[in-house]
Each structure stands twice: as C-alpha cells, then as structure tokens.
Image 1 (tube, helix red, strand yellow):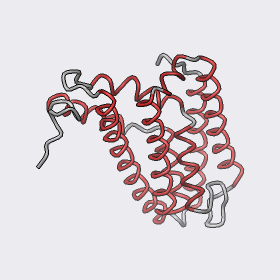
Image 2 (cartoon, rainbow, N blue to C red):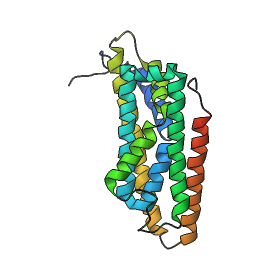
Image 3 (tube, rainbow, N blue to C red):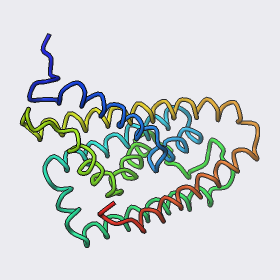
Length: 218
C-alpha cells in the first residue's frame, strides 16, 4: 500500500499529527457555518441541515482552491478587495438574521430558511464563500505545517486543506443530525423555538459585526 505520509504529498507523522489536532480544535469552534447549519436543521430537519453542511463544505473547497492558486493572497494584499468582500459577507449574514426575525415562530411552512434542498445548499455555500477570513485562514494556517523537505508545497497545501475541510464538514453534519433530532423532540414547545430563533439571529448579527470590524491581518 502506497504511503503518502513522508512522500512529496504530506509532511511527516509528527507534523501531521500536530496538524490533525489543531484542525480538529478549529473545526469544533462555532462560527457562521455551524450556526447556519444548526438553524437549517432546526427549521428544515436533517435534510436541511445536511444540505447546509455540504454547501458550507463546497464553499470552503473553493476557498482552498483559491488559496492554492494564489487568489486568496491577492485578496489579502488588497485592502479594497478584502473590504468589499467582507461587507458583502456581513450583509448576507444580516439578511439571514433579518429573515429569521421577520418569519415569526418556526413551523413547517416558514420561509426564513430556503425551502428546497438545493437552495439551502447554495445559502450554505454563500455564507462560507462571502467570508474572506476563510481564505485567509488557509493562507495563514496551512503553511505552518508544510514540510519544505518534501517539496511540492502546493500539493501539501491542497491535501492538508482538504483534510481540514472534510473534518469541518463532518463536524457540521453531526451538528445537523443532533440539532434536527433535538428540534423534533421540542417541536411542541413553541417558546423554545422562538428563543432559538432570536438567539440565532443575534449570533448571526454578532458574526456580521465581527466580520466588518476584522482586517486582513488577523
């Protein structure tokens, strides 16, 4: 069996293990993606949560490819491009928060989270894609684990980023399933659903503010 660890594809085992631990810690840290996944699962069941998780993973994959190709580095070096992208991303988060508040209590016919699976997938991708910090994360995080002795830095970057993305998507899928199950059990408790709806809208608004106040150096 071909061992890609120690070849030109991945760093050696000690460095890879360190990366795996750090990647896991980052993947379980709540953010805009996880919040949207949980919201979609709570209001659209497991199918909605899974679609949101896969959409966020697809968006992250595009960020990774951009990092490998150097496009994220261009955004990082351009204050104008970074500012435009972060304001658009913050605006999208505000839009999600607004639709949550406007929709009223959650019922099966609500429209605050898109009805179709494809629409939820697209929204999940947009939440991720419109956050420039994701691309900058790949630029800042992955190079720390690249082993120059092995060469082929672009391949190492892609594979490590893919590892991180698969791990993050897996975590989000678990969040979707757990949230959907909890939402089913609490389906008859209206006030809890309203609290969750307002709390989620508040978190989305807070993430939007955090994104707007961030810069491309952190």
